[in-house]
Length: 241
Image (cartoon, rainbow, N blue to C red; front, side, top):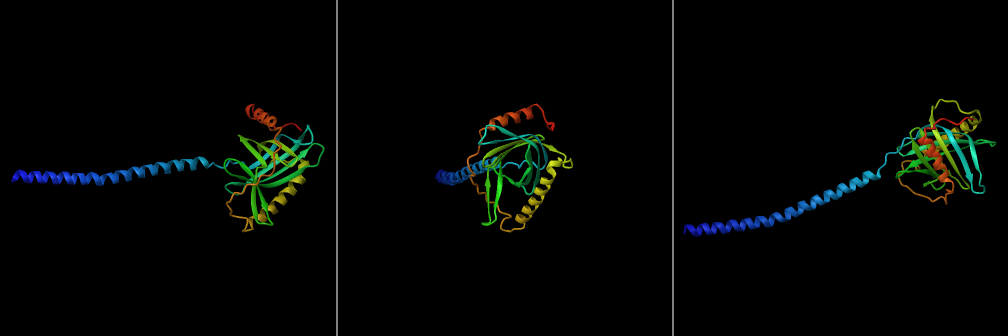
C-alpha cells in the first residue's frame, strides 16, 4: 500500500512538473518578445540620435577674405572689392543675416533674410505674407572651418562665392559700405519685427521645401579649391585693399 501511495505521489509530481513547464514557456516567449522590442526601440533611438545634428554657431560679424561672382552670360568673374556679413541667432535653428557687397566700380548692394538649419544643412527661409506661408529654398550653401566661413549664394543669373573671416564686431566698417549697411540694418529690423509679431508666422515647425530652380554650379569646383587653400594654409589674413 505504501509503495502504491509513493507511485501515485510520483505521478502527481510529474504531472505538476509538466504543467509547470507548459506554463513557463509562454512566459519565456513573452520575455524574449519583450527583449526584441527593447532592442528595436534602442535601434530606433540610435537612428533618431544620428538624425539630430547640433546647429552650428555661425553668429557674429565676418569680413571678406575672398569673393567673386560668375554670371551665366559671361565667362569672366566679377571680383568683390569689399563685403561684410552680420549674423545673429534668433532661435535654436534660425539665424538672421545681413550682407553688403561691393563689386569694384559699382555701388554697394545689400541683402537680408533668415537662414534655417534643417537636417545637417542651411536653407533660406522665405516669408509669403499674403498667404501667411513659410517655405524654404536651398539658395545658400555654408561651410565652417575654425574662424572661417564660406557662402555660395545661388541667384537667378549668377553664383556669388565668398570666404569670410570672423572679426571684432566693433571694428570699423569701410566708408563705402556704411550707408548701405545702415539701410539694410533698418530694413532687416522692420522685416524681423513684422514677422515676429505676427502670430500666424511664429511658432510654426513645418518644413515646406520649394525647388527654386536649377543652380548655376559650373564654377563651384574652382571655389572649393580656393576654400581648401585658405583652410589648409592658414591664409586667414584679409586681402589688401
